[in-house]
Image (cartoon, rainbow, N blue to C red; front, top):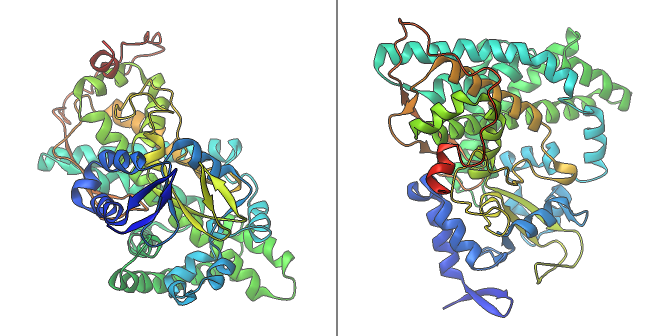
Length: 452
C-alpha cells in the first residue's frame, strides 16, 4: 500500500483516503456524510490529503486553524508561488481569488473596513419586516402548490427565493434579474471545489463571464445614476480611495458586490432546506417546536451544526508550525472540515443526534478575521422562515429525502419535496403557543427518544 504521510507514528493509506472522499461526493455520502466524517476523523485530527496538504477533522484543530493568526487564505500571491501555478490560472478560479474571502492583510483589512459591520442591528431591524413579508408570500405560494399538486419542491419555491429576494432588495437589484443571478451562482461554484474537473471548470467559466457582464453593467448604471443604495455608497467610498483611478475603484466594487451577492444565496438556501428536512421528518418534533417557538433559534443553530452549508474551507500555513502534533511546513495547504469537526464527540456528545436543545458548538461561519459577514443575516432569514412555516403548517413533512449536488465544499440541496395534510381552504392551524414555559430538559421529542 502507498502511504501519504505520518500521523502520530502511523501511516495513512492513500487509497483509503481517496475512497472516503469519493464516498463523500457520491449520492450515498451526500445523503448521509456522517459515516465518512467518522472514518476520516478516526484516521487522526490531521490527515494527509492524496493531492498534498492535509484534511483537518478534529474540532479543536479546526478551531485553531480558523482563529489562528498564523493561518492565511490561499490568495493570488500564494498561488503564484506554487510549483504548478497554471493550476490556478483558470478564469473562474481567478475571479473568486480576488474576492474578499480569498484576501489576506492588508487587502482584506482595507476592504473589510470599508464595509464596516455590514449587517449590524440597525440594518437587520430595517430588513426584518421585508424579510417577513417575503417569507409570508413564498410560504403562501408553497401552500398553493401543495394544494394544487399534492406536493411542492421547497427548494425552488422557498429556499432559493428568500435569500435572493432579501439580498436583491438590499442591493436594489430588480426582481427580474433574480433568476439569472441564481442560475450563474449555481454554475460558478464548481470552480471552488477542491479538485474541479475540466468540464466543471468550463461550466464555471461560462457562468463567470455572465456574472462579470451582469455586475459590471450594474456598477456602470449606479455610477451613471447614483443613489442612496448600498452599491452607490461603495462606489463613492472607493472613488475616494482611488481618486485618479476610477477603473481600480470599479474593480474593487465589482469584487465586493459579486462576492456578497453570490456568497449569500446557496449557503442560506441550503441552511433553510436542511433545517426543514431535519425538523419535519419527525412529526412529533415539528409539533413540539410549534408549541415551543422560543426555541426556533436553537433549531437553526443545531441545523448549522448538524449539516453545515459549507463542508470544507481552506487555509495555508504562514510559517512552519505544528498542528495537533503534525508538522506543517510554510505554504502548506490544510482543509478545515466543518462537518467532521462539528461531529467530533470530544466537543459535542452524541453528535449523530439532531437535538434542538443541544446548545452545542459549531464553526459553520468560520472564525477570526474571515468570520462570515452574513452570519447574522442568515440566522435572521432562518428564524423568520421557520416561524412563518410553523404558523402556516401544522403537518408539513417531506415526501422523500433531499437530493444534493455532488460536491464536497459547498453543500447544495437541489430538491426537497414536501407535502401537508393542512387544508389551505379551511381554518388556519392552531396558533403557536404564546410565551410558553420553557420545557424542562428531556421534554423535546428528540430528548425523550434519545435520552430516556
